[in-house]
Image (cartoon, rainbow, N blue to C red; front, side, top):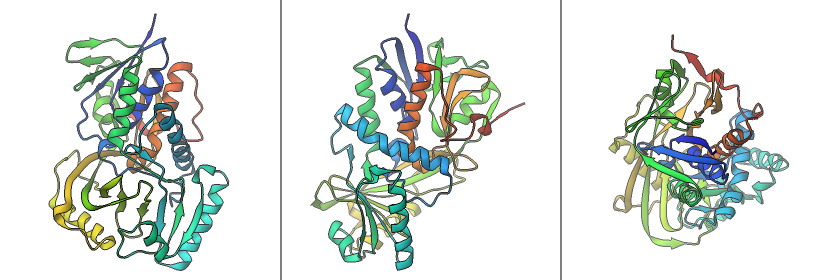
Length: 368
C-alpha cells in the first residue's frame, strides 16, 4: 500500500519536496496550495550566497548547499535559460579597501565552495563592460557561479514534472485540527505525513494544534521593467552597494528589488511610495530608465524568525507533521535544499541537520 503524503504550500520548499517524493512509487503525493502572497513568485531571484556578511555559519552552510543543488535539479529536469541561468554575479563596493576585503573573502570561501567558479576583481569600467546597462558603475567582485532564477517558473516547472509522475494538485486553503488532522473544503483528509511549507502563514496554521511558531511576515516588493534594448543571455546580476539588486533576465526584462518591509503584516497592496523608491534606485544605476518601462510591481510575504534563521523538520510531539519556515530573503537559495532534506526524511525517517539549523523546537512554543 502506498504511503499517503500531503504537502501544504506550493512555493520553493513545497515544490522541491513534491519533485523528490514524486519519484518514489511507494508514495502517493498530494499538494494543497492557494498561492496567495507567495514569496517564491515575487522574489528577485539571485542565487549567490558566498559573499554574504551574515555571521550565522549554519545559515551559510545551508545556503551554500542550496546554491550547489540548483545545477543538478536544472539538468535533471531540463530547465530552460528563462527559468535558471548561471550568468554570474557582481558585488560592488565604493571603497577600494572594502573591495579588496570582499575579494579576499571570495578567494577564501571558494576553497570549500568550488561551485563559486571563477572569481575576478573588476574595475568600474570592466563592470560596465559586463553590464552595459549601467551608467554609474562601481568596481566589484565577479563570481561566475552566481545565478538568477525565476521563482514562479522554477516551481511550476518542478510541479508539472512531479505531476507526470504521481503528484496530484488541489487549489484552495486548508486548516489543521488539534491533532494535526488536515481539514479541507471536502472534509477531513487522512495522510501518513503532512509537510507544512506555507512560509509566513505557518503561525496561524499551527494555532489549532496549540503551537506558536516564531514566524513573522515581511513584505517584499519589486518592479519589473521591459527595456527597448536586448542583452546576451549571460549578462550578470548586479548586487550593488547602497542600492536595490539589479537583475537583467533574458533579453530585455529587468528586475529591481526587492524591499524588506517589517510590521506590514500580510498586506499585499502595492505601495506607490515603494514603487517610486525602487525606480529611483534603478535610476541610480541606469539613468536611462523611464517610468513607462515598468510593466509589473510584485508583492509577496516572506517569513522570518527572531534570529533571521530558517527552521525545518518534524514537530517534536507530532513527527508525522513536518514544518519549514523562516527562510526570509534567501528563500530561493535555501528552499531547494530544505525541500530535499525533508523529502529524504519522509523516505528514510532519519535526519541530522545540526550543521544547518538549531533544533526545530527553538522556534516553537506551546500556546497554553
